[in-house]
Amino acid sequence: MAETILAAVKTAPGQTEYREFALPEIDDESALMKVEVAGICGSDVKNYKNTIKNVIMGHENVGVIWKAGKKWLQRKGLKEGDRVFLEHYLPCMKCEWCHSGEYRHCTATDWHHNPDAIRYGYTSADIAPHLWGGFAKYLYLPWNAVLHKVPENVTAELAGIGTPMSNGVQWTLFEAGIGYGTKVLIQGPGQQGLCQVVTAKQAGADLVIISGTTKDKARLEVAKAFGADVVIDVQTQDIQEEIKKATGGKGVDVSIDCTAGAGTAALHTGLTALKPKAGILVIQGNEMKTFPDFPIEDITLKYVTIKSARGHSYKACELAMQQLASHRFPIEKALTHNYSLNQVDLAIRSVGGTGDKDVIHVNVQPWKVEAGKN
Image 1 (cartoon, rainbow, N blue to C red):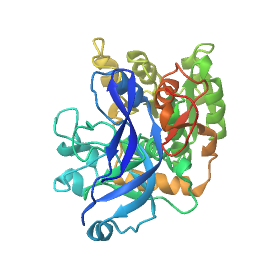
Image 2 (image 1 turned 180 degrees about the vertical axis):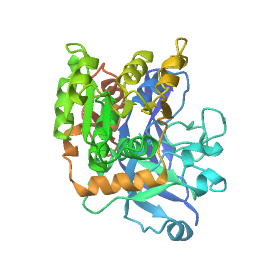
Image 3 (image 1 turned 135 degrees about the horizontal axis):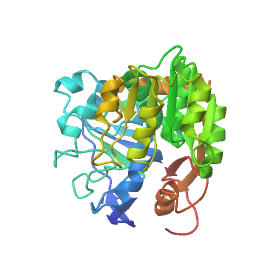
Image 4 (image 1 turned 180 degrees about the horizontal axis):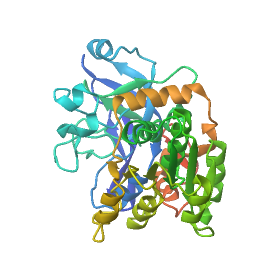
């Protein structure tokens, strides 16, 4: 009889049930990862509320190779027992995007437009072999799983922030081109925004400004520890006046939106904060479906470049692992909460602001045992 393991399954909006799944048989081209930590990001909060059901969530996954086929190990350059950071994409490995390491753009991973796309943390557990999310003790790794070996001096918990750190590298370095002497505004001091601070300072930014609300006081203190030069409470300070003061009235070179739900207000704030010509605006569309009052004249007159903050590339993940291994910044200050498998609901609600307080980066540890239920 096949061994079974427990997984947290989202069965309806805001509902989690615990189900047992059989561990799949592993052939020469597949593997199983023993999940050590599964991070939770803002998209999980949104997806937890939607109508998609029967999903084992968890797409920010770190663990060890528990069992693997010989060809799979040769293909990946790994061995059983290695700790790895798993990207949530399962790409085709044939298209131009895959050959350039930009798996986020591969049609096979685009669950927004391709109903057959498989992504960790997003795919129905009804699809065999079922283990497609990190809120379980094991994950299934087919031949096209994308992994990065975690450096020896990086713990599983620290590696758990690898996805937001990879986004930090992607958005600051590759999308915005931040480097020596750059002045940057980061809106939102959550885990994404804080990782932007780290990568911007690492890249040589001359001035890093980060904004948040009064309830973000603890997060803004962490931002200072990460090297932020100016922190702004938008509820008690005039953000544009503070930016003018910090930049001598010149404005910033780059504005990055890492807010959750600020919508068009964040875009307008970022646009106003940019220097008079050739600034870069990095935006997200997760909470902003349309923009009826799009400021096309201002964007045109200021010669603004708009870049989309969407996921990360293979190279960004590699650099993120190097960043964590450097221990140059006290990233541990952002690792605030760990939850067991039977606390998934609380973990997601805490990130969404309706559970535990003062959370920044949250990990679910499937092998951790805690009393109580969701």
